[in-house]
Amino acid sequence: MDDASFTLSEHLRVLHLAGIRTLLPGETKPATPGLLDHEPWPTFMAKLPPSPSTIWTYSELGSDLSGQASKARGDLWRRIIPALQLPKGFVGFFPYAIPQEGTMQWCTKHFIQAISMIQPATVVVFDDDAHNELVVAFRSELPVNMDPGQIHTAPGPQTLLSCSPESLHSTLERLKSILFTR
Image (cartoon, rainbow, N blue to C red; front, side, top):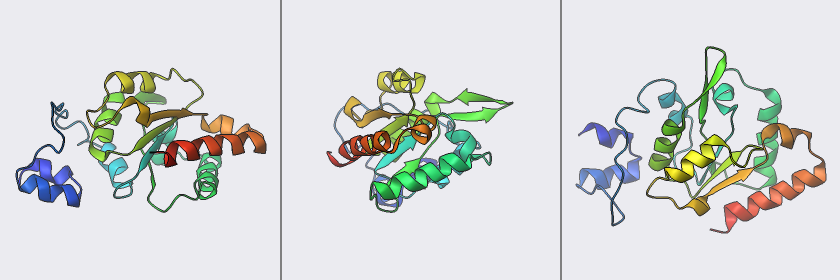
């Protein structure tokens, strides 16, 4: 068994072993070899549910997943997911920035490669800046298996934590429309 088949989910590994390397016609961009092979990326990948329908991310997520978690942000997601009535495993969290030497290091290429492997139906970037560096880079380096309509922005966690119940309800309604109209 070659190394590539170890990074595939079980249902895709069977196809890989049968010699099938692409499921869609046309050109595919090869993944950068080894980009997700070094810590903390394998740990982040292991924390994902088997086949998430959506990936949610925000700038502080790398800290939250690296042992420097914010209780307030954790509580926020534990409120939002049930409020949206999302089934277990529907949402996966994957960071685009990680803490290094006291600052957040952007890792856009790592994120894009992970998304091309995970193949979620949607990606939601929770950030108050609609021109977030990740969103701009992601749309310009879009994985071949995604279209720009699958990438969405929503208010950042700090905004969601401080907004009124009416504003939070409005945001949740918008998220529902994003997640359930595909």
